[in-house]
Image (cartoon, rainbow, N blue to C red; front, top):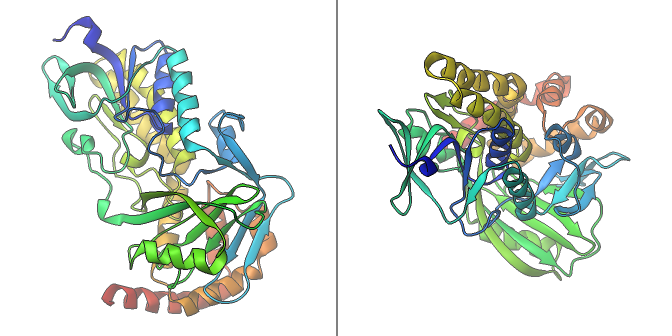
Length: 398
């Protein structure tokens, strides 16, 4: 076994929202915690659009802190392939546009203040179980021992497979591209979403205001050239704007893996598929699951054998109780939506237009299952289902 300095109760891999929350909660329970970040600086590179609901922040025990807050949002404006947009808006703010890099750094500082040790420029490359416990090999070849490993390293992680778990279906990752636009016309207090085969086939494009005359504009799609789609959208909507920065990334829409723990190991966040399939957003869900993971990891580290595994199993049950139903409904909505033709989308938006007040009242950015269920029960939506099915068949064979 390594020296005592190389042995931890909990090692958390990845200092994003999920990893920082896990490290924070484990440290609060007096576990000896190591938080690893492969990049030189926490929060970079950032590929996140940076929209989080105020209810979601509250769920994480956070407020709109000045260090990471950029702009309050009152709703969204939806642009169908053709015709006038639909606006869903509330009088009070419902969401916050944030600087994701600064949010990650804010949470990492909280974890360190609670007692976690942070190492940057340190990549975890291999997970092993040995007679001495769990062993994590780092990028430069050194090794650390830990009672429990929490993998929060994001999409593409290979650690779950090494721990005997599934990974999300990485084939269900949509390539994405985002511009930071400046010198724009004055931006309002709503996010704008654009749909259709000419804009972002199978998904959508977005414009997220970050200031009076600036916004993050991006899209994701598995069909066609995302840069051409994005350039065409910018030319169409904001021809006089200038591109201040470009970020490429990906959107995971696969849904969660079937099991998120094995002996001595927990997976959380994007690496576990704990992401809304409808939007690719994972800040709130990943952060909340990270909290549960940190509490479970610290408790499991203080016990052995079956007693230790009971805490890990409980983590998997608790997060599914919280989000499982909504994820199943979002997965269904995603599958129905992905193959829709522009004509069917236009008809669907015409139905939604008649139900704006209900969407405003019942809609929830993080828990979308309720409003999805309500809309699917609408007679006019049900009448569209044969068209939806036909579009899905065409999409499969196209």
